Length: 142
Image (tube, rainbow, N blue to C red; front, side, top):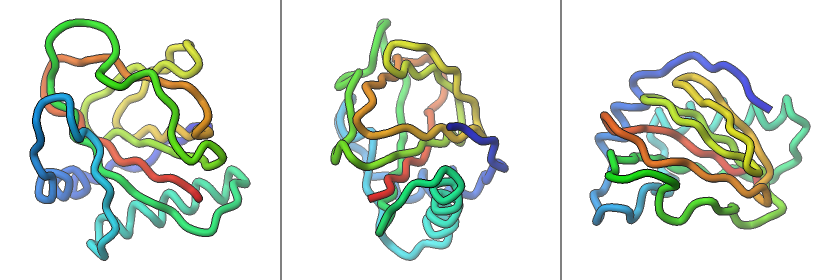
């Protein structure tokens, strides 16, 4: 399932504000659980999307993503992969940049403002990119 969401530039600013740098290729995704207004607004949008899709859940976990430019071609380190727990459902929305994501080997182009939802057991992968940092948000319905 995918939807078009309104762009929220303040969410990108929030990611840049709270991001903790790590060595290249490590820690592209960071768990967020505080009461920051941007995180809460994203969680509320994710909740609505999960409900519209008929996904049952008890709680939602949220992550921020900051993917830097990488040399070379092919998948980013650790991809393709699945998310755990496998019985959960996740969604991602890009705030800046775009990327093809390969879901079960099929290419889907994602652009800023697009939300893409999939079961955690689905194999998926993102390729390396060139250009400015790619910012995204992930939510998992548990």
